[in-house]
Amino acid sequence: MLQRAPKDHDYWSVDSAPAKLTRPLSIWAAPTLLVIFTAVAAALLAAISAEPLAAIFPNGDVVFSPYLGIHSIPLRIFMVSFFVAFSAVGARAPQRLRFFLEVTLYYIVVCAAFDLINIAAYRLTGFVYSIHVVEILSGLFGFYIFSIRLLDQGTMPRRAPFAPFNPRFKVTSFILIVLAVGAAIAVSLWIDTLDLPLVGDLRSVALLGGTGPGVFLFLPVLFFLLYVLGTLRALLRRKPRYCPPVTAIIPAHNEAHILPRTLNALEKAAAQYGGEVNVLVLDNCSTDGTAQTALRIFADLPNLRGQVFDVPIPGKSNALNAGIARTTTEIVIRIDADTQVSPASVGRAVRHFWRGDVGVVGGLPIAPGTGKFDRARNLETLLKHGYYQVAYGAVDAIVGVPGMLAVYRTEAVRNVGGFTGGMNGEDTDMSLRIGEMGFRVVGDPTITYVSEVPASWKHLREQRMRWFRSVYHVSSRNRDYLDGWMPSVRGKIILPFMLLNSGRRAMTVPLVIFGVLYYFVGFNPQSPLTVQAVFAVVLGAPALMAAFAALANGRIGALIGLPEYIAFRLVRSYLTLESVLSIAFGETAPREAQLLLPPPAVTQDKMQPTS
Image (cartoon, rainbow, N blue to C red; front, top):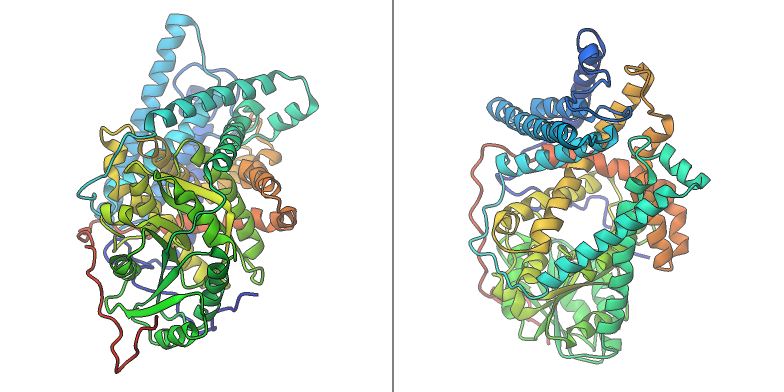
């Protein structure tokens, strides 16, 4: 089993909360937001349910166009309530007011435009949208507008000075996405027409109540089709054996407690690999004897050619760039100091590079199995890396390969400028830019590795806030793909989806509170909202997909953690809310970090690198 870090181990580093991009966040900030949100939402619901507004808006929401049916939850009221609450605690007073006015104005304009289009369609053709469609789209508008306004007004990394782009694979990817979306729509509509008890059950517990299984099943069907295509593509493209010399770079800051296990696991993988494996341990300002530990371990590992180098400038990107600068092999493997690769992982990862169009390869993280979050984490990684990454790979649209274990074509890393510093998400940034350069990014769930999972709430909070902020940091640095001319699948489809999803996840806990408030207070007695629908917000399609991902990857035992995963999703949503609250406003973003020259080797009078 994985050795846990000492109780006094400090997980905070310069990478946890980059200077000027984040602000200190009290543990009471999110609870304060939720209290304000509940008060504002209750006031607005009461106002819209009383005369004279009740007569103007009989559905309890601000919808001016004709519609069919009765909705479950007035999402426009929810959105405005959240904007008020977030603006009240999300920044200093001037920035709060500016953000509230801008995000609310944008939202009102978009919803008004949608209502006007609906009115025009009704006048010209007699066609009327269902109120469910109006509310669902109102929610999606709100999630995305919130994230885009946060991207614009929050302090973010500067736009990268260049955005590498090659149209290779892009046209084919767009065609495949269109075909997959069309097929998913057709299958979902067909299921919606079936007169089966299961269809009725799905309709009764859909996200907003009564949306129909067609809407509920669209994304699961889409990802299933892409997953099948991605799996077939992976099987056809990989070579049984390809083992050129490789270099593993391991940035390490106070990792003496875990580094022996990491190096011993890499030794077993090197013995099975069949090719030369060089290892560079990059000691980044450690005070616990990390370098001495690495040198002592290397002496007993015959299959590794190990060296230790001192990187005196704090920051993981500085250590990584120092390792890249000293790499002489065509393939470089980035490994976190707390990651233990499986014996077959190096061979399985490198075999993809026999094709010259592969630039990055990632695998499937496995939790150690000894911590309170581990079972939930296993389902999370099975869904994200064992299922969604494979699906994205079918259309060459993988954005992020986690830095816990990532294998790169060395020259590609250099050509995109090395690893950027001073922001969260340098690993996602790297794989995204290599992919846009015209290389394939591969996710292979047969490449497994054990990676440390936080054992304490403090560590989990630090990790997840760092991870969730990275969506905004990476999008800001690569803004050219979002609003530039390049026909980028990642920039025009995947990054916007990630931003929308980040906004949705940040609002999940408030949405549950809103649903409970709306249901139990009874602001709209005609609403079809049910307790099942409220629970569906908590459970959602991802919980069902997590179970399917576990089965698809042959890990039936992971299903025992499903109840913990459902609870963990709420915890994760709460931490997403904290992460967006931690984004600074009104500061000047730091300049782009530069690729470091090779650092000095550990000197003879300190420690001599081993070979």
